[in-house]
Length: 80
Length: 229
Image (tube, rainbow over the protein chains, first blue to last red):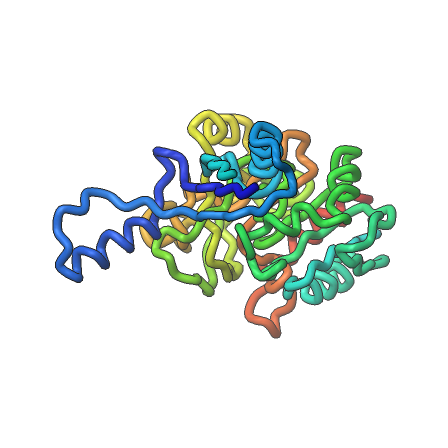
């Protein structure tokens, strides 16, 4: 069972890297980009075959290590 | 005085910390490897600067889960003083020993220069040999020193005198270029609730010997020596 974890900064937390990417896009002539937020994608290959169990386990991983919930939020996708 | 300096793979200020502790505080200085399970009984534990685990995932995130950190946290809860410098500060926030987080510098640059700090609270075990309002000069060297915490946490820290060090200019005025990384409220160092854990981005251990460019860090180690006595 595969899991994908998307981690990004919480709304309201300044993202200077996202801002810099936005400026770079503008310099390349891409107009109309209102805002850029950047984050991380973590892919996990899990032994579990139970999607609910996998989601619970990955949630715990996020809380303990993968995300810093002071500044980051995360979403989990489970793929069979 | 008994000092223990914790060493992680990628720590690079551990030796400076040992030299500063030995020369200013005297007594014994233990170097403790991150895979050890216990810290020898200590009056002071130093989490030194560096790039533990190559800053993988987030600065300090891996080290926060090192075997030794369980015992560091246990000893801190019993009242042992912990001085968490630079990467040590990042590790301490990742463990939850200190609130908030250290984010990428707002200008995205690694900053390596002397900064001025105003002593906001001289009534702590770490700062009692300074004067309140005194401005000192010591170096910073970091990429992720941008202190962030939510509004409530910032209010609490400010209200309880736990913002111990603030970035200012040489005259003690905060704001503008005096803040090297974008930290909220120009925060350079904070204390935990019990007053025995100080996290700071600047490096007091680097300015303990006039041959290295300054001595304004010495009083922090003198403070600790006095507090322990």
